[in-house]
Image (tube, rainbow, N blue to C red; front, top):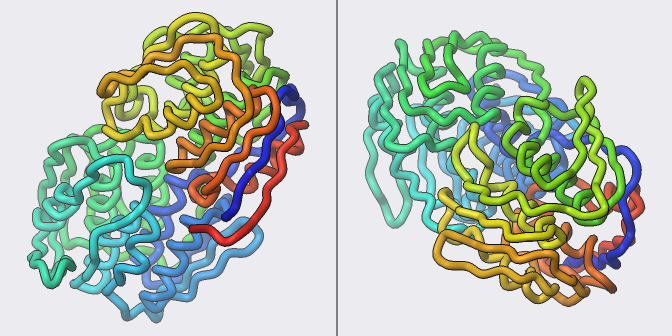
Length: 420
């Protein structure tokens, strides 16, 4: 299987660009089928999740290619409306195709999605949203079949689910009439999807706020759009610099999307200097524990940034408390961090890090996407060599992580093999 060997103890210096947002690009790819024409999405990272989305698009009858950091989708000949279990299982966010396929074809057939096992992420909210727009839903052999011509309506989300908000917005874009979405998620990726739909000719108001209004209509036959930067990738490389020491510059960041993350690192004593769309990160000789970090929906601290921050806190003096309110199994990486010497106690949704810890290289394995990133961060600060197995988890969300770390001076070597 693919693995990463990191020999820690080297400070990081240099400048790297931040990739396009994984969690932003994937809904844009799903939304590309709404126009029935050609969509070009620029600033797209080459990730295994992006490859999975390309396969879904091709299965539906679209022409979908990736070249020079851009995805091009021609959905004019799309006829498919079923997504098989084999493709659904490749990524948890595959459910985002539900709304666009239903809106475009008047029917959709899916199975339960796959992805990281972070706890229950039911699709009830997605289904209820489609039902609010007029869809009829039935189950057949473990698959869900949705049918109906969608009309505008009111969607009251029980919780501000990012995926359900995205599915609601995309389905409403082709529904007849106006749709009101309440208790909508406010993440930057929602705002970006709104901008994409607006650039495609959809009248949409409030994307990125708790109330979104979408006026359904026909989309333009050609769309070119540049995806926003990946705030979680930026948070991961800030964590890496904090753990390893040194000074790095991140190009292509949006300051407002990183506020809750940068507040935590500022408390730790990390120097952060924004200039236009760049961020300079300067790690002090000694980090301070940031106190209590509670993950919450945006604008709160993002759950995806919690594991790499926790890994950086292993080098900080004092106690850091993490309260996870989003995913019940978000601490699956903790036993692996303990193998490296991390002192971490877990009680339900609370994890306490007692630092600073003396970290030593060991053989560990990525348990999920962000947990794998946490192991990379910790390995950069550890004495000796760390071997990180099951690297395919990391490949789902980080483009060329090994190459970027090497360009900053890290001793990192990737060894590719057959993943299991």
